[in-house]
Length: 262
Image 1: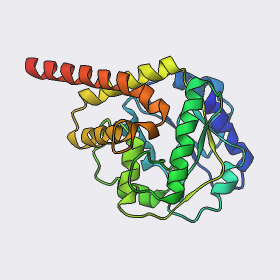
Image 2: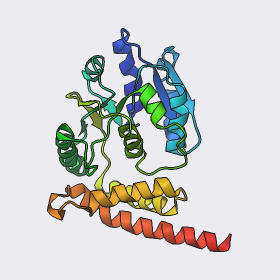
Image 3: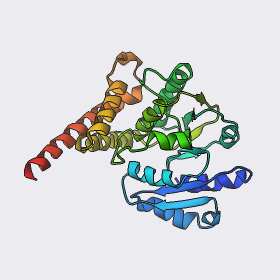
Image 4: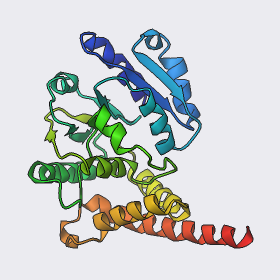
């Protein structure tokens, strides 16, 4: 889906807002082709900045954050598009960060199961942000607070980078709100989701950053087999658990093999 071009075009309908859209391109040639080919007329907007960072996602995020000069920043993935009224609601935000509800737009099996989880964590967020189990992650932050929270952080690959960013922000502020407007997600097939879970676990198993690696593993275990009863765990997390665990063990084994031969 050409969601990036949809996001870029959305700023045309909000010319009265001080918006600056930073399109961050990582390793994906497909995304580069979308922006350079499918969005030729939009890239002439002076509020649009395109960065090409042939690196991992978390490192690329730090590069984008350096050029943000607006009061707030909204984080959107390539498979997400904002709902029609989202920007109108964001203009009235006074809190330090905001949780933006997410919903499946294509409503496949994976999307329907993800929506069960999304609604659950959003309801929990309306009551409290603690404990950090099944936590809804904000997409909207005050820029100065976000930059201060990440000052000095190692930008090497970090699984659960969104949750890690949020955990840093929570150390300094708990001024937040939960929005009514949503971000729509193009959810992958169940097979693709399980494959991504395997790759995600393998990447974590290979990860050599102990701080970020331990954080990600703790977060995953708390989600899938933590202090919650299995009966309360969203079905999508149970689907994810086996390929994730298999990938993690494979990644760990390969990292030890490389260490022995180095």
